[in-house]
Image (cartoon, rainbow, N blue to C red):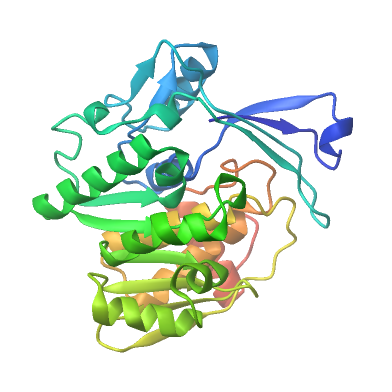
Length: 310
């Protein structure tokens, strides 16, 4: 979607100045992984309009492959309006009903969309946009599984897209079809019932998952493996300017580590570091680091090295 971000600290209903950017769970993760040095392709649908052209231009500038993105001449690009406050509730308004993204369907997925891919990352948001988008998500996951491509999944529950029951019915089954799960503690409780840790162990025993990562309410995180091991990570203490985008940043950081074969404890630390860097800057993506910046910042948090680059 195109993001219009109100000037920092000003409530949405009072804002008169906005900064244009790009937002969306999968595109945020794509941008994060690209900055961290990975080759990334984003799949989606945009309107044949100035907003769609702006999204494509910004993703190309981030080094993201958009050659498989389709345009819809009859539907607009989705729009998101929000404000940003470090210590008060944030107002987020979505305008995506009837958007090009909501009209995504299996026929829009080219046969070579996954060519060369090691990992497919999807979120529950896409599947909740419409019935056709849900079917496209299911088809894409099936193709990835058939092709031996690892599938990672972040529920990214958004209550404005459906009731708790609707999320359980549509997204709950997908958790059992993927290889890597990155979910919030509250999302695990909603979608699987019971405690988040118990849900993680059930997915590892009954589903395809080889690893489940839980992002907890206190901003700590845990990884559970199919072998029964568990690793925990506390959040890094930073002054947050805007908490929106932290989950996507965490996913990008963790998936980068997974793609590089990094040990689980280090992977959690990198993910927590990337998330901490993003929340210090307004907008979903401005704080996303390069690999070098991530490593320097992580060393600062863990080892107390000089924070100033001289």
